[in-house]
Image 1 (spheres, one colour):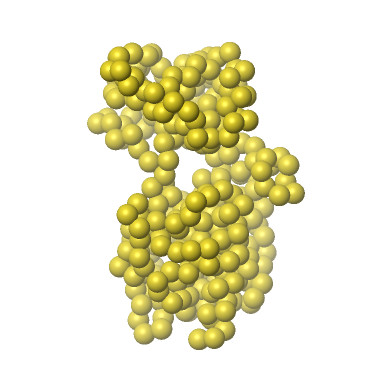
Image 2 (spheres, rainbow, N blue to C red; image 1 turned 135 degrees about the horizontal axis):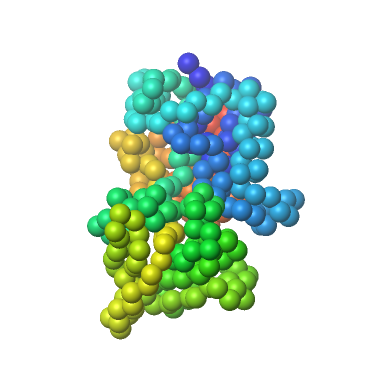
Length: 301
């Protein structure tokens, strides 16, 4: 049995692991996919204190190495359910069951889809949710990026360096992402911004060939593209824990800046919790706070 189990190995979860291990708590980190979470898709991090320029992958690798060096155990298993038996939490994963006296939920969020009928079928055949993962397949080709936040802007900027043409499609009249990135995009001659518009159909013959875009005035525009990169937000990965901890209407874990849930002994960190600012620095901050709260709980229980 462990002192603490952390579910999720993104920046919040790995930071929590570092703090727990420094307090000499036996710590297990469960990760369903790969360490690092969404940050691994960021090519250049410019807003993290003391790191002027670092890639998301490099940042993640350093964080993981630090947690392991301190003795955190990382297993690649998906947590399916959590139960409380007396004062012990049991985590059922797809490979095994694990027990601990405290939990930190740091599952982050997954990509939100457009909800188009053949979106899933075209994944890997023109549809992607990660430009840094799949952008190289579209070198010198025409692509579209859908979204208006920082992720969409960064994806469009990255793709502008390797593709022939980038259509940046946003349903609103203004972007919600950083103005600096918008200014950089406006200087790219191969980027065309299409505002107040929605992608309503993916047209394909084995693979994506065209998208249907409809503006607020119902004008239809057919655009020939080889790929579309969807960056319209995230859905929190929390539903598997709804039996024990309270979620808000959007599915985020209800918790304040203290990272405490309604259940004593369960804490939440990072993008999975209710919060106004979801940035790398707030994720690592949450991880430190959640771990500190967990340490206090463990020491007093």
